[in-house]
Amino acid sequence: MNHDKTQEIPTRLRLQVRQIRFEGVGINSYELVDPAGLPLPAFEAGAHIDVHLAQGLVRQYSLSNDPAERHRYVIAVLNDANGRGGSRTLHEQLHVQDFVEVSSPRNNFHLSEHAAKVILIAGGIGVTPLKSMAHHLERTGKPYELYYCAKDRDYAAFSGEFELFSSKDSHRFHFDGGNPAEGLNISELLREPEDGQHVYYCGPAGFMKACAAASTHWPAGTVHAEHFKVAADATGGTDLSAAGEVGGFTIKVTSSGALVEVGAQQSIVDALSAIGVVIETSCQSGLCGSCKTHYLSGDVDHRDCILSDDEHKEYLTACVSRARSGVLVLDL
Ligand code: FES
Image 1 (cartoon, rainbow, N blue to C red):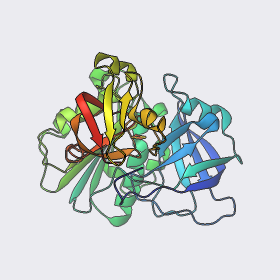
Image 2 (image 1 turned 45 degrees about the vertical axis):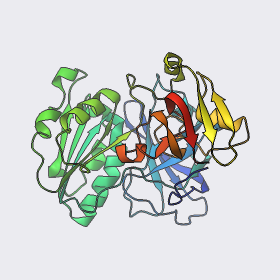
Image 3 (image 1 turned 30 degrees about the vertical axis):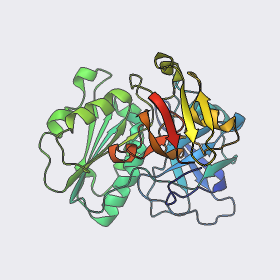
């Protein structure tokens, strides 16, 4: 259930794997096409799809190819030994010619039409949505710079493809050899925002923190981030054990007046489903916005990485949000 009527419910597509390519150490790209060769639903730069894997696993992957293409979606997946199993399943079980169910594309990471110039900063596999943005910016002729941080060239996905961009002179690769002290000086890069400049970044947790800290003085609305993994030290995320510190809480469903107890190790989504109220979910990690729910009152402990400060005044993500105290009243 979603209060936001403007958010489209994605449709399911059954696609076929046409090509799997080694893109870098631990990284494969997957080219997905319609089995009958039909054009796929259009997507915008920065969009992602849900990939439905075996055993009910659903994972979100950014589309990396040119949004002008309608004949394929290309995702890139890092086999993350410390992940929740989705990337490993994909690497081990998805083969060329297999069929896979995906959602139609959704975009939480929009390129601003008002930007005069764009800075893209990628950390590792976080390059995937930024690559689709680079394709779009190159095609539309908008000035941009791409900074791509990786351990070394062998770990940098798509480095060969970036060589083919006509704007490759505006691409900067930065290899730290695995030593964070040798990392890109992000503070320096973002020190003085120019008029009309927008910055977009995506990468692992430490990189995200560095970009966020370096851009706090940028004008409102000019800094855009996409988290593909909840920060290990974030005050929330998928680890509901953190909720033990605050215990359970109560939610009230406005339409029925029902009061529902949410256990310390339970999400709002799960507590509501026990009384037959179903909230649409996808990532279950506060990353995608599928479960965005309007609330009317309560002291919400937001734990997502997707909603803006303004949205937090009216919405919560039912998969990860908690209450700090009192009763949360949901507009359901
Ligand atoms: S299901 Fe993705 S944010 Fe809640």
